Amino acid sequence: MTTLLVKNASIIDGTGKPAYAGHLMADGDRIRDIFTPRENLPEADTVVDAEGQVLCPGFIDMHAHADWILALPDQSSILACLVEQGVTTVVGGNCGFSPAPAPTQQNMGQRQKEAILFTGREFPFAWQTVGDFLDAVAQNEPIVNLAQLVGHASIRMAASENKKGALPAEELTGCQRVLEDALDQGACGLSFGLGYEPGMYAPDAEIDAFCRTAAAAQKPVTVHMKAYSRISPVYPITTREAHNLKALRETLDVARRTGATLQISHFIFVGRKSWPSARQALQMVDKARSEGVDVMIDAFPFTAGNTLIDVLLPAWFLKTLPHGFSNPWLLARLRLELEIGFRLVGFTYPDFQILDAVVPGWEHLNGMTMDQVARQWNLSPFKALLHLSRASEGKATMLFHAYSGEPGNEAVLDAVLAHPCCLFETDAIIKGQGLPNPSALGTFPKILGTCCRERRLFAIEDAVFRMTGACARRFGLVDRGTLVPGKAADLVIFDPETVNDTTSPEGTGRPKGIRHVFINGRQVVSDGACIKNTRCGRVLRT
Image 1 (cartoon, rainbow, N blue to C red):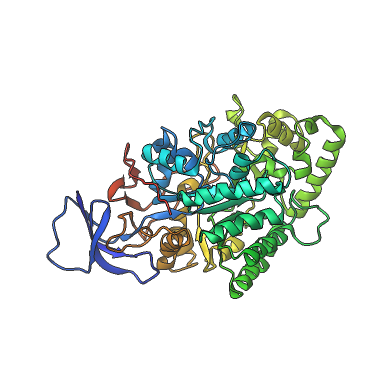
Image 2: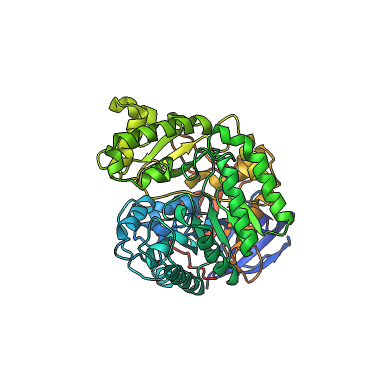
């Protein structure tokens, strides 16, 4: 086995404890020793002088969608951006969608729609179970470590033909058996996508049953809530309570009823009229925690996030597709609802930017906003939106702006990130085509640079803890997340004075200040650049 010595570092060990000066010795894929400064250092095959640098555990992207890419042969070129920002482990299977279990033949079309969203291509689904999928990823030698959630929507489409309604009792029982098997096979938890089909159709009894199964296995539940804005397509527009607060209340109540360990995904406030609800939302989380509910939140440090174009369309309209696109009465109702909804939420068409139009020949639209596309097509923005939705079959990937703020007005975002129970994530759809989401390249460097060093939202030790040790603890990754002898040698060396992202709405570049990255003791980033053909990750079954 090869040995590695990182000397003269400022060590932040991922526990939240203060930084200290020291050296670290790794032997093969494990940390062998950590010791304070001394003159006679041991010899090693590789020596890295980290004078003036921070040495910390590898970053854990606890809300990722890279699991879909890790099964593909060209994963290294697509996901290099993650390791270049210090990510050594991803938690995949979020928002209710995981590559396994495999769907029924009747549901294959819907699952391929998801695959195109996450990978830009049709997907093999060359496995049946979560265990089979994890075996396939391991055989493919992943570029990063993978901890895998199993998605509620994916389970439904593996065990039921019912896409748009509550599950009959016998099908719900079958879904629970699939969930139990997935957790037994090493899935680290369960995820919901309650703002997407078919999750939006699941009644409370179904959600509770899934959560109780996860709780019995002592594994967490991550929830993409039904709504993140004041008004949403999921609830009736006449609902008096702000939709995002109603969704949060319902989500917290699920944890209260079932005892599930709850992780609320991407705690965002979508649209300018939703921002004032942030204080009340954080208070609701604090109240639940004071009552004994095990709930945490997560967020990305940007005021924009990627999603599907069809999240703008209400559930009643989605149920009418495809004929709804040509029904003038339905379109008139939809136009009125969107106009009112955008005003109530605080959205405008320039807030909707195309990352990947998906339609062949429409690549020139990538990076444009919907008002720009409308002018190019000589259509109203409403008709342009429908045209893109229809042509892409709902697969167009968008970057929505006005999430928890906007450039020059990020107080809400800062309040969320600074909250002590907030973990950090990319939530990035990375598929090697279209315009990249800024979080795909800059999340963790921006947390350390803009948020920590410049805005002083938290101490650097706390920032590192929340992107390493806290994530490992949350998902049961027992040998990751902290620098302790005997644990895996997933390491990041960064410059605390220069580390930051270089992202902008127009494009992205490599982050600054991430010097070296090691995964399982092997170097994968040198002087900020990913080393080609180094696939050192592992599947982390829990």
